[in-house]
Image (cartoon, rainbow, N blue to C red; front, side, top):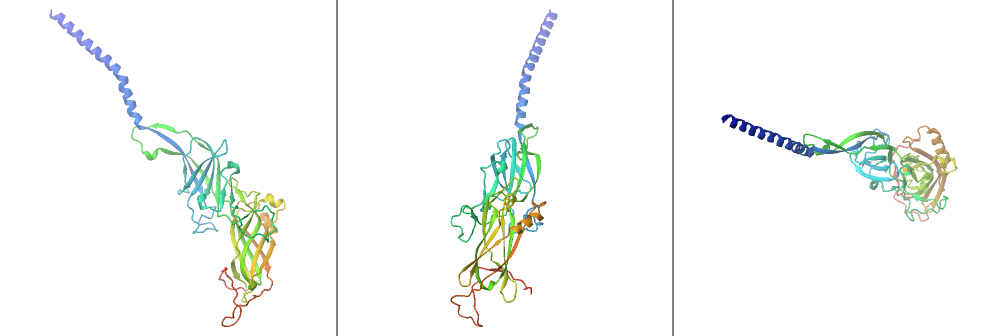
Amino acid sequence: MRTDVFFHTLQRVRRVAALRFVVLLLLLPAVLASCNRDHLYYEITNQPNVQLNIDWSQTAFSPTHPAYDPENALNGVTIFAFDAATRELVAEFPPDANWRKPKLKLAPGNYGLVLINDSRGELPSIRFNVDRTFDEFDACVITDAPGLINTSSLTAAPDTVYSYMPEYLTSAAVREVCVQPVQNEYEYDHPDASNTHVTVQEIDVVERSVTKRINIKVNVKGINYCKAMQPSFMSGLSASANLVTRQPEKRQVVYAFNLNNRQFRNDAHTEATLSQSFNSFGFSEENMHEGTRFLITLNFLLVNNQTYTASADVTPQLEQWLEEHTIDCDLDLDIDIAFDVTLPEAYPEDPDTPQEGGGFNPETSPWNDIEQDIVM
């Protein structure tokens, strides 16, 4: 009798144990799924970044550059992104204060990038044609200022446009930049939110000047007959430049400038050098080979209040510059232009009342005189 009870009890224990084992087997997937769901809390999405390492040493923003101007500080780099397939602009990144190593967050795909100094707002005399494709993306001077200057004394073509000079502009282009799709990763520890963007590609870029500096010097005899300067002009220079190739384009413009830096060349103050420098988009070699002439027109306001106009064809000087810099024409080199002018004699119609000591006191404003010892 006791043996039967023992065996019945043993069978019940076995059935309970078997039942518990089955329950554990059934609960195991749920437990594992619960662990997986808990780990999903640590799933992160990494957006691959492209970092641009920009070399500015070839531009006037570098302290080692001959044209460095501490007052013309670099405020950032603006980047335009073009779709590699359609060649159209898809994004414009505002100026990045980290202008040495900016990082881009772009959707996966292939891109062409164009980099310029500062922002478009800080370059008010330059228009950027963002509706053009990557290969045709250009910058041009603002020329739609009605009645800019009286141009009746000029002999340029009727459809020629007139403009003041652009600001200093640099650019660089990068082709076929590939941005990878986002990457999903799982971490055991809670991820740092600042690590959700990773740099997977670094690209070295060299920034170079798009604009060229024009330095004009005019040696004037009879400067004592000049009361002041009126706006001067230079024709034949380009109105725009391609930002990908950094080459001047065929569109031309007449640049207007003031030639008012005066340095006397003798102690009688009858000879002086007038000078001025301004930025331009350079000139098209193709235009030059096709016969474009580079003309400078100067307007002197004489002491008798009459305007004397002097013109000079400086094409030979630009041809010589091009011949000397055929190999290194892409370098940031100035173009120096110099010529001589002799003014006609002129005297005030109503002489001023002689000052103490006698003699005329002609008005010479606005002049920016350069103080320097006179070389005899």
